[in-house]
Image (cartoon, rainbow, N blue to C red; front, side, top):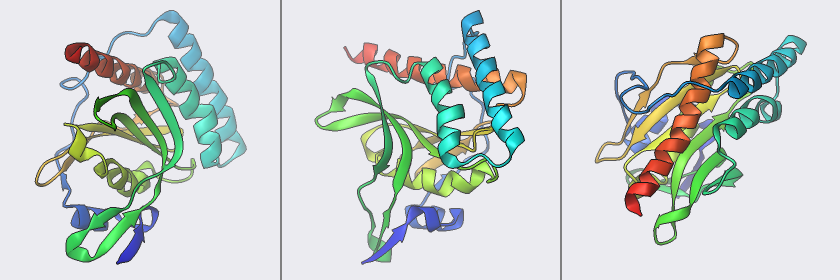
Length: 219
């Protein structure tokens, strides 16, 4: 069986191999409730923007620096480091078998947020899958990897949120299972612009709250 690394696959290949269908670009509002930020959150967000901007001014920001200076502080502010959410870094995915093609897709996702309280036996709920790139790479270059990684757990839940970012630009995707799994791109947001930066944090906070709401309904 041929082994394919997700990072080497073009979007067209992922769509063909995993039968993904692209839906028209969507909006956050039908899916998430975005709430105003507190003054503390606004100040912390501004500091994160300023910190990352100083790295951009020096030149290309590496993928590791993107995670440390841009993504990490935003996840902390949004609540991703608090129980019952658990963050995983550089996790390998189990091989995705493509029976019709006689191939498997392998790879390592950059960041994964899960609910440590499983919904079904031994199957954790994936809250957010994150693929990071360095600042010189267009965010959509990471979409093939994101879709491949999210596909692995689509059979265990009704939807998965994904995020591709190069530190400055944040592209969220809403991914759903089915006979033909689908993905929908949300508006592209820029951390270097005030209002879009606020929306990035609002979306991340809403994802945490959305998961907590789902947990409350199940208890």
